[in-house]
Length: 79
Image (cartoon, rainbow, N blue to C red):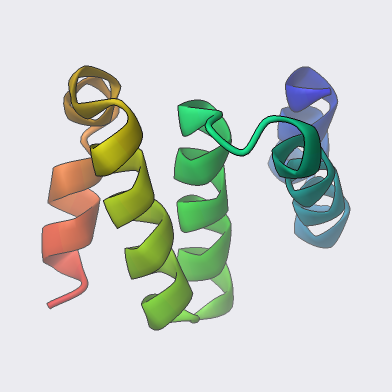
């Protein structure tokens, strides 16, 4: 499902991607990649507070992945 969401996202259908991301989190709330992708989504729609929450969740779930995805850099850009 994540690949489908990414395809939607890359085609500019970010709301469709969002629906898939939230569906994935219902069954896999610890999915760090999805939290990262949701952070990007929230940044794109201008919801800084929710983006911050997703990046902080990612940092908590998987610090190594967060570093690999530069989530800390994205989080720092929010301030």
